[in-house]
Length: 363
Image (cartoon, rainbow, N blue to C red; front, side, top):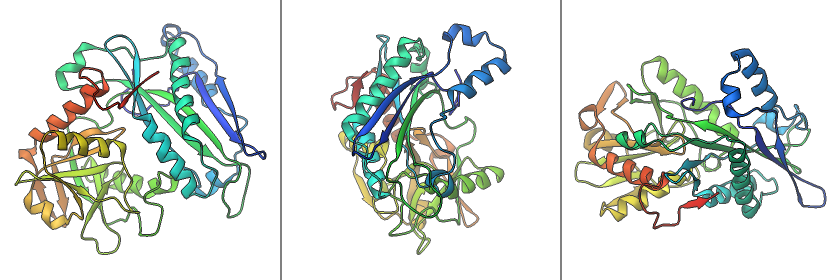
């Protein structure tokens, strides 16, 4: 199974289109495939050709508000293999609610949350029935499931044919599934504060929309070229307060034991893993503060740093460089609280700990 994100999409996908009679026209699509065992035996060229067919949706128009102006939004969620051979999804209800709000924020008809939940379940189930699913591996327990695999679901919107400035009135919602492994490559977890701005007040920073990711991608690439794993953004007005990583929320543990994270607002994405980690930390008796986080404070007083997200999970940051100065956290190693939170979250997701919170949804 591939590491990180991959375009090795599973055969079953989903589309729904908002129609003129104000209803969603749904379709489950079975794209070309063989059994997983047969696909593994295909030559690289044969497999590539098969994946191109699976990643083709001829009914979706090329020229539209999404392709021309980035007027679209998306979600990312995972289904995790369990010890009993089943798969369970992590908090898909939260993803459905966030996508509904994102679509409303982009002034398009919002996809109903009940349709979202039903669709992601059925996409996973239909692919499982074809044999496309990860299998629980006890070896993952040795590193707190950092090396664990899962099913990544990518729901996204796509507009009707259009050119010129406008908003989508009859969007599609598409859901595809892929295998996914570790997001961040091992060996480098250094972060660099970028001088670019991810979001501005009264903008779309709170929406998980396509256009929000252009600047973070550029900043992350520039950071990588300079030898860093991650780019971290400050606020766009004063350039004094930490806001986010390139595609993740960020936390700092101060030397007095307090866990701090930037407070939500219209420039911060309301992360689902962020919300979960705050709750888990509270259960552990950790004092958690959601507030403005001055970059000077974390450079001087933080002794742990980690980021959270669907892809990142809970991933530690070994150091942060800003204005030529570098703060090293936990001696460059993963901190104790970071490890506890990472383990607690992963054990719930992979079914190694009891889900007392109702976060895991059966397929």
